[in-house]
Image (cartoon, rainbow, N blue to C red; front, side, top):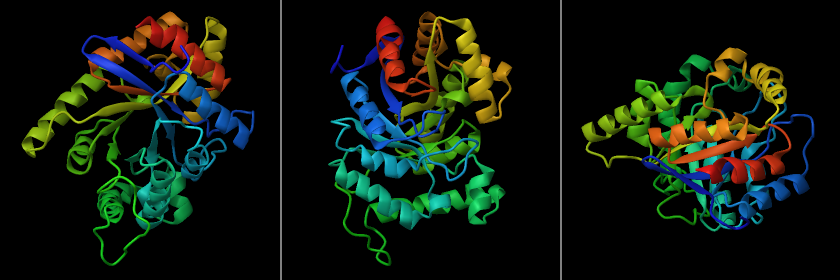
Length: 311
């Protein structure tokens, strides 16, 4: 299926797939050659998005997301590039607007700006800000970021301007709380949900509440959505799947392994992964962005051939 757009129809949803750049070091290290090969594999396998997440500090080494996304712009073909998410409070809205504008220019206008406050208290400690202030600061920072990208702030006239006019679309991340969904409705042109903080039932409920918020605000409903950080490892070996959950994912995320087993992550046999993806699609997921835990290029191909194709 090289070059074929990767989609699956299930229930009410027609799902598009994206691939997270492998920014976390799971033992193989980093190289520009490897990132470019991964980006080309995503293009050849029919994925529609290439994504980069953002942390300053994490439980494992984390390659800088915006820098990595810019580095593979040429290899990404016609894929939409997405930050899933970038951190305007942690990085600063002016600095982030400058970096995102560069990515939009270098990709000929293929950027979706996904933003959130971030979930890491270590990131906030590193820059000397209280973690508990993150949502208040985020509301201010994302409004400023949007005005900067659109060239609406006369005091800070950033140049050059993005290719997209008036600016790249801005999507807001939320795990699905009522205040978080209100922020999505207030600030966003799309919603980014977290694969390791949701379920089909939770997703369906969140989408209904988000539609209600949009109607109350007199805005267009529904907004586009994507489920991000869908940790991926397709294997028919039950022991290997359990090792990924217990030895890799659980300590990295600080989540009990029993909780991870209960989620709809595509980890395990292909048939089980396909059922989980279909359930998310039936609940209203429009996009799913996968993140291979190891053997990244091969996992992108396995997901294409044995999970997405089964839909």
